[in-house]
Image 1 (cartoon, protein in one colour):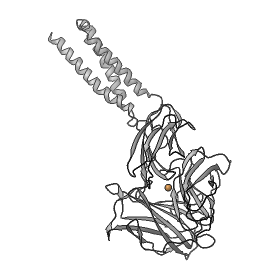
Image 2 (cartoon, helix red, strand yellow; image 1 turned 180 degrees about the vertical axis):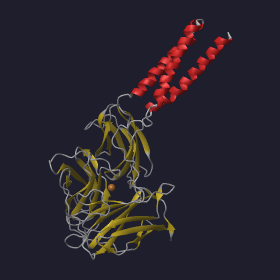
Image 3 (tube, helix red, strand yellow; image 1 turned 135 degrees about the horizontal axis):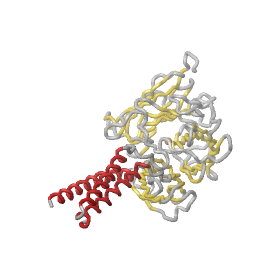
Length: 487
Ligand SMILES: [Cu+2]
């Protein structure tokens, strides 16, 4: 009797051990990490930041957080998950697009593998963000071993504990031994499992931290990601180069909002380009520079394959320069395509910002610009320190597009001054790469390292985000000729 109770006890301990092993193994397979991707949308008059949690392999729930930024007009936007080109009105989810800084989470559903689009509609424009749901990968052998071993162990244990079996000690012992073998197989297989699960299912994750201590910049033309390089004289040609054509709605007028439509084609084949990846939280970073020295840094929304749209509000007539920063899937690298569009009406003369360093007033803050005497071909550091209320350092700058600050610049064209529509004017986009503070914020200072490619006058725009508004500090820098020819 005592011996039988002892056996029962041993079997129960075995069962407990088996369950303890099984629980984490079962959840380990279910909890494959999913990608989280941020996308900035300049949708009509709105700026929205989407945070998309990719659905699991095979499809399923897809949480999306909508964060209004900038100046949020009242009203809603509607989101949906549809197959490419599908009708977003089939199952729309209404999301308030205000107030600024207030995130709203919705859960969309992408049930099925393959191509999907997250649509965001404001009543006049339907943005379509492409998402790919991967097929589930084959179940690894170790998972099968765990499953079979565990199932064998459980069945043998239950059988061994049955009253009719307990009266036949040999059979009970044999079943116990089978259970032990099953558990051993399961435990051995689980312990040999790879420590990390397979890569997530959806489009590439854009969460990579910037390299510490370095800086990054994007030059014009076809130069890939080379710090400080601005290759304005090198048009984006060669394999993979994207040609962007821009057109406005009919009769674009000064002061009236108009939709700028961008069509993307491959410079080599002429085919529609629809394979842009998200880089720095957007498929296209668009700089629209006016003849008056204005800059709009916006993020056009994809409305159809190879077609993007963004709302602009020209303050002056004349020819506007358009600079589209993009990265294609594969090894396309970073590229900048240029184009231009015209706005009817007299062109206001350019009003350059005050040259060099000094203090400017921006959104109730003092922005103190430091721009040491710049020489062509030599690295220069341009920095801006923000204070408020007569000298209190501003330390609540918010990260924007993954960075604490952005610098966009336009170099001298053939006329010797920055001319947006002159292809010989160098374009650059440089990042502040300092790490965020403990609260995840930045400030009071942002800084940018850049090597001005040649002498002449440059227009710079330093951009930071505070209170969900992007603030722009225009700076003019006169660059002296270097003593040695620039390489
Ligand atoms: Cu951008």
